[in-house]
Structures are given as structure tokens and as C-alpha cells.
Amino acid sequence: MIDDYEKAMELVEEMKAHLPIPVHAGPQLIQMMRNEGVHLKAKHTLAIEEVLYLGDDGGIMCALAGMGPGKVAYVCSLTHLKVEDRHPLAKKIRAYQRERTKRLAQQASMRRFP
Image 1 (cartoon, rainbow, N blue to C red):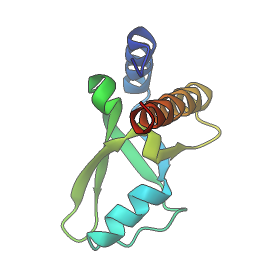
Image 2: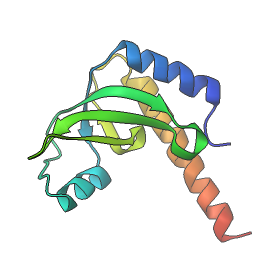
Image 3: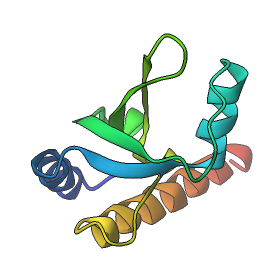
Image 4: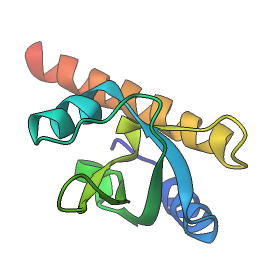
């Protein structure tokens, strides 16, 4: 199991109560968006408009406000976003991101070395 389901759902509900949440894209999201023609800078502020939980496979997913030429909305993992330090949920979000990333890495290493 990657996520503690109860903690993840608690965070989802807290995040929903604070929408929209200002965030910045992480390097992987920036690269994906650039590949799709959206030239986003790391300092550009995005807004999480919706939050949902996709279980252990997907984790906490975030719908971002539309951007780019066609105002395309993006959905990405919370682990690919950086929440602003002053946000009231910053500490909880970072704790979730650290724990999920750590457990995903452990799971990946176990698959390589059975």
C-alpha cells in the first residue's frame, strides 16, 4: 500500500475547502507542458481548481485552471506541484508528497530486485 487512505482522503477534503490553491509546476510537469506547446516558467503561478483521489495507483490528482493557446486544463499528480510556503496546507501537502514519493521509490526498487 502506497497511501494511508484515511490520511489521503482527509487531505483531499481539506484541499477542497481551500480551493483554488496557488501552486507552481514541478520540472516534470513543466517539461510535459512544453512538449505540448505551453511555454510555462517555473515561477508561473497555477491554480488547483479541483482535487480527487485515484487510489494507490494515481494518488491525489489535481485539476489545474486552463492555460495555453486553447486554454487547456491539465490534471496531474499532487507530487508534480509545489505549493506556496504561506498556504495553510503547505506542511500537510509536502508531508504527503514526501511520503508518497518515498513509497513509490521503494516499490520501484522492489520490482527491480525480486
